[in-house]
Image (cartoon, rainbow, N blue to C red):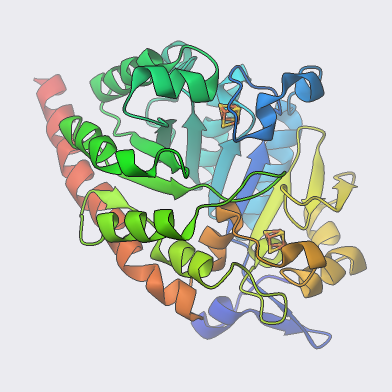
Length: 355
Ligand code: SF4
Ligand code: SF4
């Protein structure tokens, strides 16, 4: 039995059926290379180093074996994540390997270590994001609890000098949402896209207030160089995931792998169970356990009201519900910026460096 769609496009969109159970297309792997971090952000649990400072780094050989299997299972995107992913000394080899399997790669970094990896990573990361929490140096450094504001701009300059077009990732909170116009200006000055990431509630953090949701939604409307997934905002307005009519596809569309070489279920943020990868991933994905989690995705008690962006982005990948339809325009805008506008600039850049 193959849980992956190999048939018609329609099957690929809605999934194949096995033993009366529907298997959806796997799209994304969130690969946690490390749980360690070099920042102490107040909205993130990796900011508490006491819990994570002695945790392991993902092994390159495990990574290669897992990613090869995932590519065979149809996974198209891999997010090399953490903690701070650039703390992993072999990240460039991992990115290179994933690219060699035609996967789209992404990294989000606080910028502190980018200068060390920039040349080795050039051309291997499709979506490179640098996090900036405020246009004000003092506020950004206070939120991150480390002096890293200047590192973000230094990283942007280095990346651009190598022909890369990173995005600026702004995690909007109830304290910072009114700074959105200035963040937009900064991104525009650097000819970059501003990714607006509405903070979500987990591990006791508050989510975005209704006033902030309205402000952010209105500001981003119609702006070509700002990416906000409108589906996220609609989901927030409706009170988040509804366990009686779930929109989450965390298990069907995403594989989450820990630095301990385990699959995490149903999602990282509300991990309920881990399965050691000691047999083929396909076998694990077809096990009763994963099947149970898949049936329960978005239906657990803790799923009520959930807005964890990392899982709703792939959940809204196909226009199968109103949230996904709402996100279509923003995805189109982002694709236009990345695939047309920035690609043309890249071609211009390589032509000028060849001369
Ligand atoms: S830099 Fe990233 S992973 Fe580290 S604490 Fe901040 S948000 Fe979390
Ligand atoms: S609804 Fe949220 S908590 Fe539940 S499985 Fe999905 S991402 Fe995890």
